[in-house]
Amino acid sequence: MHIALPHQWPSTPAEAVAVQDALRPLVRAENPAPPQYRTAAGIDSAYAEDGTVATAAVILDMNTLETVETAVAHGISTFPYVPGLLAFRELPATVAALEKLTRTPDLLVCDAQGRAHPRRFGLACHIGVLTAIPTIGVAKSVWGEYTEPGPRRGDACEVTIDGEVVGRALRTRDGVKPLFVSVGHLIDLDTACAQVLALTTGFRQPETTRRADRLCRAALRAATA
Image 1 (tube, rainbow, N blue to C red):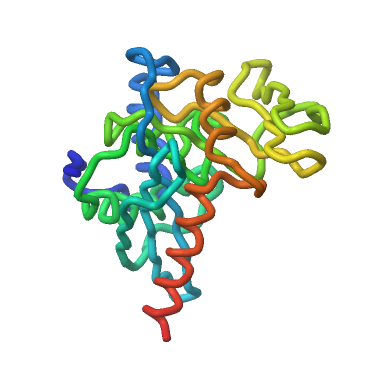
Image 2 (image 1 turned 45 degrees about the vertical axis):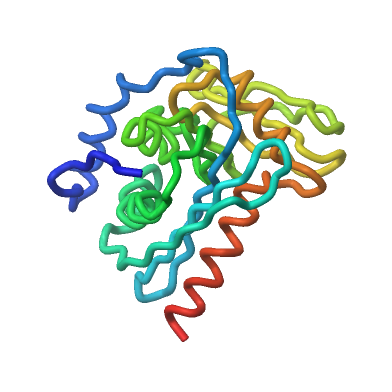
């Protein structure tokens, strides 16, 4: 994959917020064509206390859920931790990992927010706009308000911020805490939730996230040993 990048990443929170505000209008919460997702890639990052970061990208076959390709990139995160600006800590290594892939996945699944974000432009939106690939945000925590969905797998309820629907709380296993699904780019919310359920078999998180999480943690341990 090749990803068009800015000349330089923002170095301050104010610069980062300005980038989010500029790119937010580019997000499309719709399927550009009848969706045919043959492969999906999970993306996740792990950090050490000194700022060392390892990011993993793992491509799965959507029919078999077999892993078909993986890539890992390392870096040093210099951007400060600021709620709502996670993207600027993770994007450099994330882009580097994606560019190591020899094939382009049909769908990206991020362990992060998409439109369910104070400025409606979380990490999943940013990655989607940069790559022009349909992207979903699947987070374990939530920005906004929601009521608890029903107890069965597939039960869901809306997540809202200031009265605007920005995502869904989705139960991926019976009786287990929901995940929070939101649009990143080039996909609608119904399709995003359906794809998350298709990728979730036996565990709370989709297989894309589980495998990327294991790989980035192992890569970080190896890098900091």
